[in-house]
Image (cartoon, rainbow, N blue to C red; front, side, top):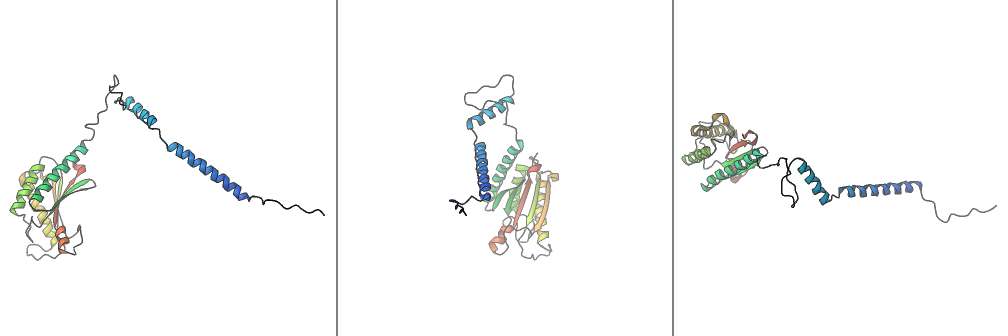
Length: 235
């Protein structure tokens, strides 16, 4: 009986062939993606120039300086009036912040979502336990009001305290104290000529602290008054 010849090399498993084909296809796919992601700068500039010229704008190349005849120039100068109002508002608030800081009063301008917040430390604005601003603070708020009363901005005035219990016959708790501080500032703005329909006052007391009330320094930071101006309400 004849012997069977031994195989010189073992046969390749069937799964390995399929795996090799899969790797080849994946490599081809990634090469295709890479080639599609490589954008020619020249072709991109040509495409942008064509779209711009089609809508009547200026050519984006250096050698094309003239308007296309019988077409309208695209002018972006006044296209975003709200953005300009936002920048102007921030500039004015920074000037008010500087006024308070020059008087030794800590102040901060914060952009938070769709609103700006002017945060002022209340230690030098109110005497301890008092809801009436000092004479110096009244002068600062009067200046603040004069700068903004013709702007049409809607302002929400919010009073805050630390978490130490108040000892006063006039106020039962910090919430009442913070609310009356905000209301009295609102009254100063109304007396200055600010439109009452654009003003509101809120007291938050010891709630919503910006830092934990665990040290005297942190409690001082939480004693504050904030002026909220909603950007969506800018005319």
